[in-house]
Length: 159
Image (cartoon, rainbow, N blue to C red; front, side, top):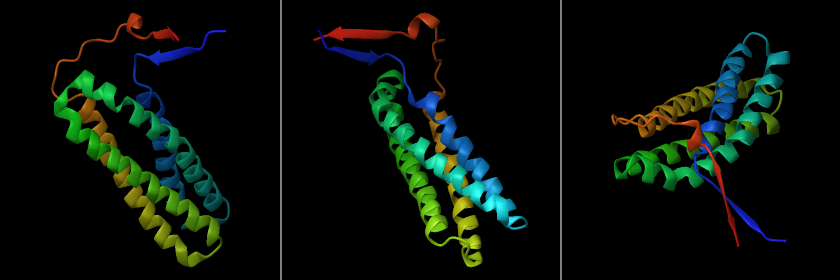
C-alpha cells in the first residue's frame, strides 16, 4: 500500500482561530459576572478558559504551519507583523493557561477573584490586539484576489 502525503493548499489557522477567541472572551464576561454570582459562574468561566486553552493549542500549531503560506501569499511586508502576532498569541495562551492553573489550584478562594479578573482583562486585550494584527496580515492594504471554490482543494502526493 502506498503512503500518501496530503498537502493543503489553503490556510487552516483562520478556520480554527475563532473557537479560542470566542471561548476566552465569553469566559472573561462570565468571570466578571462571578463578582455577583460566584457559585455557578466561577466553574463556568473555568471551563470556558480551559476550552479556550485546549482549542488554542491546535490554533497556534496551525498558525505555525501557515506562517510560510502567509509570507508567500501576502509578501515579505507581513513578516514582522506575523512574528508579533505569533508572540502575542503565545502570550495570550500563557495568560489564560495561568488563569486556569490559578483557578484549579486555589479553588474557592475569594482573594484570587480580583487577580483572575485582572488577568482575564489583560488576556482580552491581548486577544483583541492579536486579532487586529491577524487582520493586518490578511488585509494589509493590498488588492487581494477573490477566493474561488476551485482554489480550495487537496493535493495528494504519492511516495
